[in-house]
Structures are given as structure tokens and as C-alpha cells.
Length: 115
Image 1 (cartoon, rainbow, N blue to C red):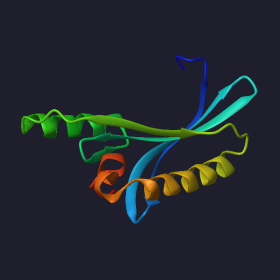
Image 2: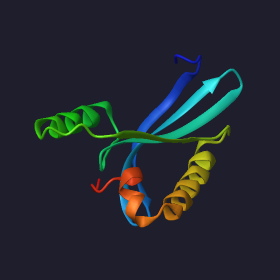
Image 3: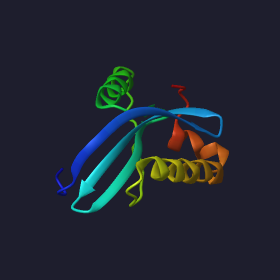
Image 4: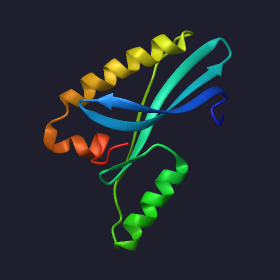
């Protein structure tokens, strides 16, 4: 909304990427005639947080152990009026991207935790 986009739909999903279950959010946004489906998740340390509540709980868990974790937003989007098609293309892209990340770094992108 801050960039002028209208939020048309949102849902939490679990993506299967390289044998890992990743909790993620999917949005369908619109700005004028431009429809832009978005898939994203956040990592905190080696955990994935799909929702704001998950992120806050993870921050507290790390904080109670005296750890200040790095975080990363993993986000893909495409301009496509057909959201189902866009999400399928995005999921294939994410699968390819995760496969391309060396195994020793993968937990930074997709976490260690299972959904």
C-alpha cells in the first residue's frame, strides 16, 4: 500500500523446495492495470518466519538466548494477470534458485526449521 498498490488477496502457503517445507506468504497486488503476484518469506538466523507473529516469536526466542540474528527477505514477483500461473512460475524459479545455492549456505535462505 505504501507504494500505491492495492492488496487484492493474501494467503499463507507451504512451499516444497529441494525437500524442505518453507512457510511463505503469497499476495496478489494491483496498481492500475498492473497485477503483480508476490511470494515471500523472511529468515531470522536459520529459521523462517512467514507471518509477523512468527517473526516476533523467533526474535524473542533468539533474544532470550542473547543472540541477535541476521535477517533476510526472500521475495519474488512477476507481472501477470493470472495469479495461479504467476505462482507456478515463481515456485519453479525458487526451486531453481535454492538448488543453485551451495548446500552450506542454504539454511540462510530457506532455514533449518520445517513447516
